[in-house]
Structures are given as C-alpha cells and as structure tokens.
Length: 104
Image 1 (tube, one colour):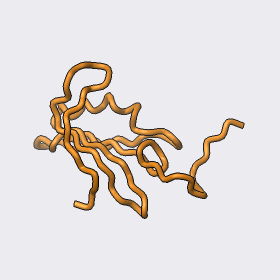
Image 2: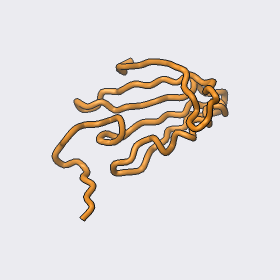
Image 3: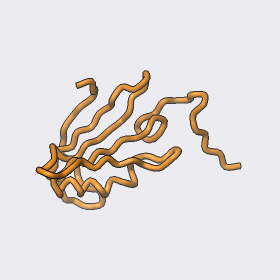
Image 4: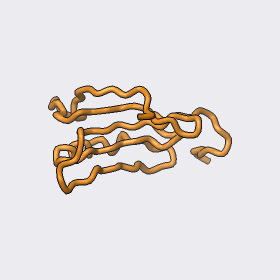
C-alpha cells in the first residue's frame, strides 16, 4: 500500500461526547523524502457517491479547522483530511525555500 503508520480507531467528534460511528484511519504517505500526514473518516462510498477530499488554506494552516466536516462521512462517503508539507502534522523542519510567516 505504500503507507506507514496506519491505524484504525474510534474517535470522539470534537466538542461532543458522541462517538464517531465511522472507521478512522490515520497515517503518513512518503513524498520526496518527507512524510505527508492524512486521516480518512469512513470505510468507503455508497453507490453514486464520491469521497470528499479537504484541502486546507495556508501557508501555515492545518486540517484542524475543517474537522467538523468529518460528519459528512455519515452521508455514505469517505472524508479525507491531509496536511500539506510544512503544515500541521506534515512537518518538514527548517527547509530553505519554504514559507516563512513574518510579523513585520
């Protein structure tokens, strides 16, 4: 499969005590010597439905603010989160040519 660190688990939906009924898979995909983090909510698609791939803004943002959309998995589709390289859980360290957020 080419992915490492896969694990499935039960998670709580943020800001509630309700257990998410869908399968949650999380891991890293190797990319150009780095690791891109992802999380997939749901096990597959119902007939006629497509997965929902969520792309966060940036530079410097992560998937966190999109997490409420995990509930879309209850509509019969997988919801796929990922963090772009250099953001969130896809940390690449100090690399020349990356984005730098400055306050001046």
